[in-house]
Length: 468
Image (cartoon, rainbow, N blue to C red; front, side, top):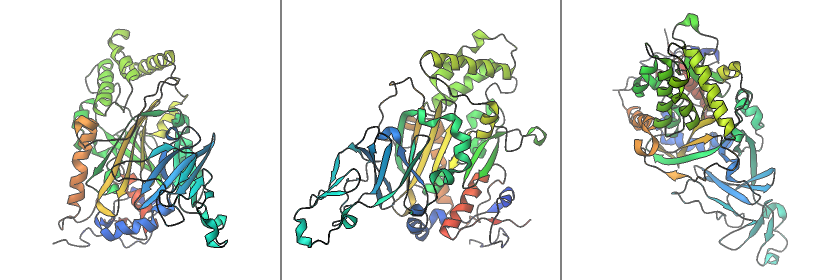
């Protein structure tokens, strides 16, 4: 029997940002309720900025991509060298999609100078204006430009990503992003390009999937092979709708405000930091599908035992390693951005952008995730991951979205470990024996902040303080 209220939560109407540091609980309807899943269609997705693609997807005028969210479909087209338009993917005549979007395709890409409806041939230019209607005179002048143009929605860009918003009264994207844009600007994501991109229809709610990457608290229990590089004590911090996480000092006396973004490079108790730095760089590269580091960084780390004397301190090893990698990249035409230690510390290791975008950033690379609903089924989602990297001009690989089953062979062993939890969390939350969530107030604060803001859009499911 599920004992409702057994956790003992405070009956506080509104959770504040300060409350996020306290023990909280949030209900599971957001993950398992069919009614909640259907309500997202009207209460959440039409109201938020959503990452819909990358500018490199549509490099030339006439290039377009589609983006689907639940039963909405959007076409984003480059109309000029520096201009984009976003339209609902529907002909205003009888409602046919202008671009077919099969369920077994992640998104549709192409190039057109006009969009022609496959039903009756109504035609639209890149600016969304109707340019051809067969026998238009039959409508006796009723077909005005306002009635026959494509329905437009908001589109904007940041960091090389394309964002759309269906709300005509939405705030500007830069305001929606808030501190995220300022803190991550030094990384110049717009200069990175796809290395690979994969997707899968996964048996969990989209929130179950994306929350698996909102906190590093799970490292000790899920990615146990990493424990040899030292203890992993996570921090998690809210920035408005969004949040950042990283690794902190376990000793409170050593911590800095907001987390220190401790790296395990050069770490590992009783180990030679020259060796452990290489081992960790290689581990991150090879087990995270060649996305959580770069070949340049791994090769520079491999040389440390030859370039530095035994007994070199961990910080000096890391300093030499990064300087060598930077020089190696410069020699092949990859210029690192100038990011100060203070900026690196503030940026942390991983960002969650509300509602469904995740960025794990490095100086010259990023591993990114997105999860979307699969229709209105609360037990399925479209899960996507892609790697970005800086490449020499013109040497970036040609990539497409590849459907990949959630195995270590396809995704790497670390992501396979994450997949090994998500489905079973989804199932477990339905149990009558599950009394409610107990997120870590320090290390999983991004998760509770996510639910705090999600509940404001949805009008239900707000976190509640646990009685002490």
